[in-house]
Image (cartoon, rainbow, N blue to C red; front, side, top):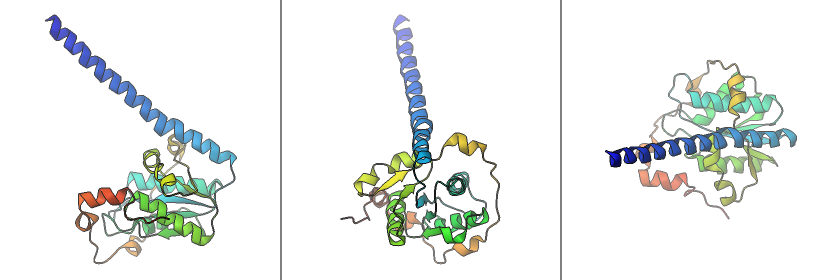
Length: 221
């Protein structure tokens, strides 16, 4: 009986330790770091352009993640932290080009079309970063930031030095997002629809997807 009790105590300690560690890790990466990076953005000069990575759109209403990413980009634009926006993403899992869908929403939300750019080739987050950076260089933008949710910011961070890019991070600040009055908009999604679409699940094997998600398709100097 004593052995069993000791065993359950050990298991309980392990579970509680994991919970505490997970909570600290979540707070640090999802709350603390984004606030620090946003504070730095507030005291710096506005960036010439922000990059917003895509997320699948199924032809109905935009999903939670896309809505938050677009709202964050529009918030940064309207508060003067970003002068332009690049929406990035091809038709990856659905027939709708993600960059075009997000751009249509941003226009509806009041961002002038002249300040919206789209990158429609990227299949993975690393490609969102690199291909959009190439567009920024062609447009002559000097300062570039990658603006998305905290978890994707955390995942993409190592690839910025790997690709040798001068890009900063402005991850969304959840307390700010919770204060925004978000609403739905009607868009002409047919403008983003791709005929003869083939899902990435059919075009790439799981091994290829993992390889390309780590920048395997990107050729840098």
